[in-house]
Every structure is written in structure tokens, then in C-alpha cells.
Amino acid sequence: MASGVPPVVAGAGGPKFLVEHGKTGYVANHSGEFTEAILELCGDEDRRLEMRRFARKAAQRFSWDRVFEEVHRNYDACDPLNSSSTVTSIAETRSPAVIQS
Image (cartoon, rainbow, N blue to C red; front, side, top):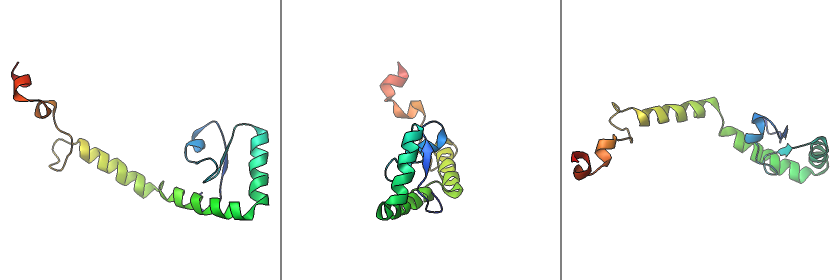
């Protein structure tokens, strides 16, 4: 996908979660579907070029830099010592009446 090639992946395993079937590539659940997808990509240049653009754009969401940034942002959100943390303690989210009882 990163090189602009619409993938045809098996319906089992991790790669199927990266492919939007029919838009960024194909998910094939058996050999017949795999063959059909390859033949469609080979026989329809306009479709292949459209999927190629979508595949490349989708792959950019999965860069290691973006993954790291997202993980780091989530850790920061959970850090109670981080002043910009969006997570609050249970006590802070309850009314004083509930806490005192």
C-alpha cells in the first residue's frame, strides 16, 4: 500500500485490518476471490489507479512516526503528573455529596 499497490490479502490474519475492501485493496476469503481480485486489477486500469491512490493515502496513516505519536499522546493523557492530562481521578468526577457518604 505504501508504494501505491492495491493489495489482495487473505481474509485471515492481520493484513485484512489494514485494507478497506474494494477501496484500498481486496480481502479474499478463498482462492476464487483472490483470482477475481487480481484479474479485476489487471483488467481495469482506471479502477487500479483509483485504488492505488486510496491505498497510498491509507498507508500514510500507518507510519511508525504516527503510531509513536499516537501511543505517546495516549500515555500523556493517562499520566496524572502531566498537567495537560485529560484523565481525572474518580474523586474529581463525583459530586462532594457522593464522596462524603
